[in-house]
Figure 1 (cartoon, one colour):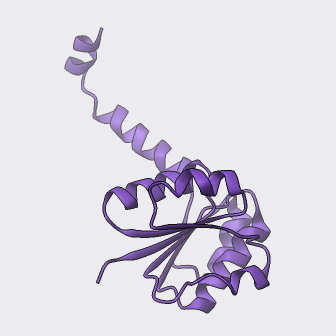
Figure 2: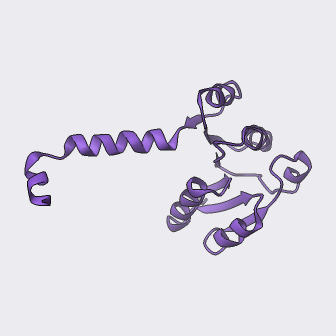
Length: 144
């Protein structure tokens, strides 16, 4: 059976995840409240839908049964993040990853028992720093 992933929030972070997963032949359901964004990603994901992610009634219309992974990509909108995480949990999504915007957001997500809480900017910063550490002087001389 193919892995299925639901991505909620299609900013730069969510869209990049959706593209990479789709390229890897993983079934992706992309969700956002902005129809223009939904239309853009609909070209490469399995299904894209536009709903008000802060509305429990809207969530009832979303076919979330049997999803393996859910990624909630709101770092700024705490309400959208919390409601989306709770709805994915209620639907039985097996593994939930959520982006946190700050330490308080992280604490709330941890209290909701979200499987993984991430800070993408922090993570990329660590990778960039590690890449700089690994550049040796020979490489720097050849780059000039």
